[in-house]
Image (cartoon, rainbow, N blue to C red; front, side):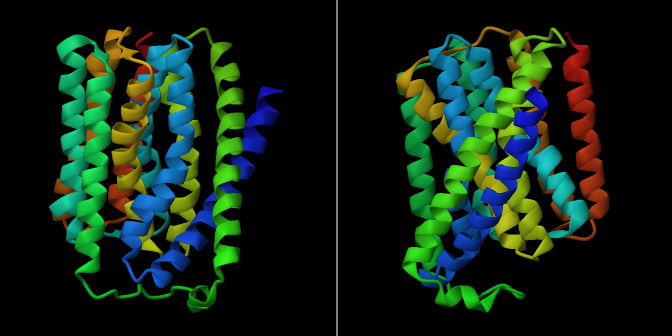
Length: 316
């Protein structure tokens, strides 16, 4: 039965990713803002919903390792699995804004999360509030900055999306959001049942099986965008989701229910993998070809992620 839930979840997540990409491109035309902003707002909010629901439910159920491991593991999977696989399919071009605003924010939040957890082994209401406010400020700066530039559509965009009606756009967003929500729920449910049969800890389940399950929306949206050459949305979706996962998912969850740290491997091992995957994007951006994550770099990133998953299971 668990396999059925996994398959059904994957189907819904792919459908949801397709509708969200369509809606994102349409919104970029309607509001005359860059697709990187759309990817980091509309798409990121929708694809971060599974992480939020899983982490919140886990915290309320007294399973803080799942709440934390889900976000940390998802951030690792977004770069290691999703970015690596997406780059192998279609090399990703990196915009100059990436290292001026987007990457520094992702790196800053990752470091702040480490010190918040290390200081007291718990994320409380005040710390969650600070994380969430940082997201609001970041989005304000991002949107304000994008409006100061002339909008330049990316090549090979479906021009018909300029004529999308508001009603159809809302329907696309609803279908995408609902498909991602139920698809993620079913996939995580099936994955947890399968992982529990191996007799591993909640930490291992959360940073691998659950994290991959909740990252499938990012994988679906990014792969579809890469195949359609919507490179700005692919990269914006991934970096935006990592920012949302820390600032929004953990921020809101901690504001509702404090998230304690029980398994020391989350702080001593997993979070350093997350920092490492975030940091490696800068040297990769500067290596030939500059400002591009090509197939070779994607293969290296994906291989590193495979090593992380193997070590996570072997550490038990």
